[in-house]
Amino acid sequence: MELSGRGIARSVVKRANSFGATPISSRGVLNRAVGRLGGADGSGALRKAVGGKVVLVTGASSGIGRSAAVRLAAAGAKVLLVARSEDQLNEVVNEVAASGGVAVAYRCDLSDLEQVDVLVTKVLDAHGHVDILVNNAGMSIRRKVRHSQDRFQDFERPMQLNYFAAVRLTMGLLPTMVERESGQVINISSWAALVRPARFSGYSASKAALEAWSDCVQGEVIDDGIVFTNVHMPLVRTPMITPTKLYNRMPALSMDQAATVVCDAAVSRSRRVTPLVAAWASFAESVSPALGDVIRKNAI
Ligand SMILES: NC(=O)c1ccc[n+]([C@@H]2O[C@H](COP(=O)([O-])OP(=O)(O)OC[C@H]3O[C@@H](n4cnc5c(N)ncnc54)[C@H](OP(=O)(O)O)[C@@H]3O)[C@@H](O)[C@H]2O)c1
Image (cartoon, rainbow, N blue to C red):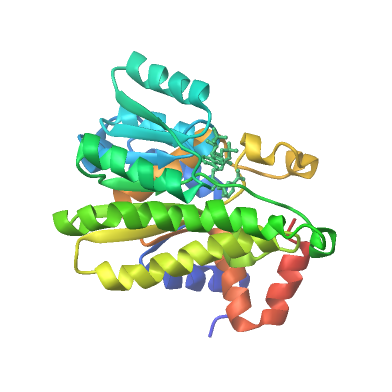
């Protein structure tokens, strides 16, 4: 076996690709995604993949979800925007409409599962089905476990939003996807689900749980034309990361680049989209958990 750095990198990429995964790096995102999508919103492969389709994006009032929704609408998708902030959702609706697209806002607190059920009913009544569901709404907590000793909510809250809400929404929309033998569920997971870095136990566990759930269900709907795509998103400069000053010094994707990653996932329908650095960390973990520990101790 080749043991040089470049050799290992090549074999990681090869291995990832053999599982239907798309490895990404910050530079790769810039080069590949712009090239693959033709570099123009609403044109080529993306228009073909999403044009005329109903795409529901959760967390569409801000950050990655907002940028992705605008791009998907520009490519001809009818986008259904879900979040709690009505004013911000309406801004996105207006932005989409101003450029000739179609967007509909749905105010919903996804952490409340009864509201998720109401959302499903409203969406199916109005649109009949959803072609692509982007489970993007999420929250992150960066805290050492010893500082959460009296804060069990640090584990409950991310599970409620990042896992249970996404499961409930997916379960609500999946039957019509199965009936229509067509659909895609794109989970905006995180590289943290693979690396499991120190201080992110609640967050990483919630993202990893959704990925495990999705992979199991994929096995049940594999012959129904439905694909689950887990995107191991790297750091992105959004409002979510602004409270952590340390991130100012770290490389991060722009919101536009992250939107490209999401659009690329809709085009490729890959099962997994993984940044190269996380693929490396995952490989290290599979060789030795002790090697993984070195990475997670020093990750962020
Ligand atoms: N930024 C990163 O570095 C990064 C890296 C990896 C993965 N991610 C993942 O990417 C996704 C988007 O994050 P972002 O960075 O774009 O963050 P963001 O700008 O803070 O956006 C989060 C979105 O989720 C919505 N949301 C939060 N709680 C909600 C609730 N209870 N019900 C409905 N919607 C809710 C927010 O809308 P309202 O507040 O209006 O409800 C907002 O639209 C998250 O799942 C995050 O874990 C982010």
